Amino acid sequence: MDPRPISNVISSLTKPSQGQIEATREETEDAAGKLKPCEKQEFRDEEEDDITDINVNEHLRKEIQGFWRRVYESKTTMCRHKRGCIYNVLTGLTRSALLGYATKYAVNILMSALKPKNFIKNLFSARAIFDATRFALFVALFNASFKVVLCALRRLTHNEKLSSTIAGAIC
Image 1 (cartoon, rainbow, N blue to C red):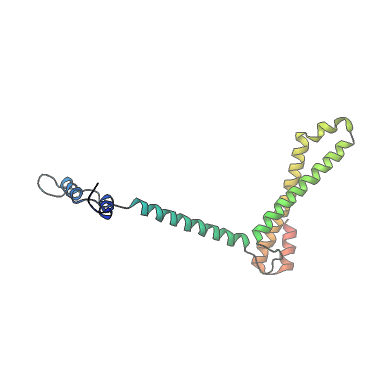
Image 2 (image 1 turned 135 degrees about the vertical axis):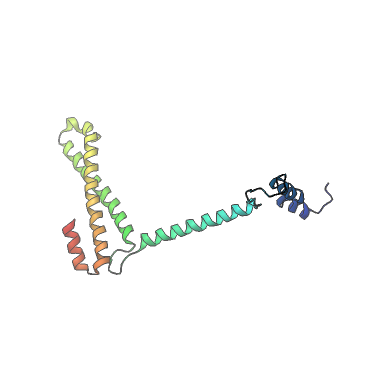
């Protein structure tokens, strides 16, 4: 057993001893007694650095989330949607893409039902899936571009009639 109190043992583990300081001093002096250029050594507590890094990372993550939440949920007073403009655009994009895909695929199924001989073959054909996907993307991008232009013009002009007219003409 070590007769020293536990606090002395712990402090000796984290701080450099007098012998370590003397050895460092001897390594930096040359034969003539002049100091050699050397790098400054710092004795740091690694646990403290880890805690600081965690706090900084946590703070940075919270700031980024707060920024994106403000961007995601920001809207003008003229906007009629409940949440932010970006939320409105993204929900409209996904909703119109799903509805466009379902509608076009249903039309493809009904058209292939008229020819019962090729019904199963046409049901899962790559051409039918590609055609439905292409139509869904067209509808979704058309809808999203209209909403983006409309919200941007609402922010710039603060005039609902002018904004909706220009957005409709552009899209």
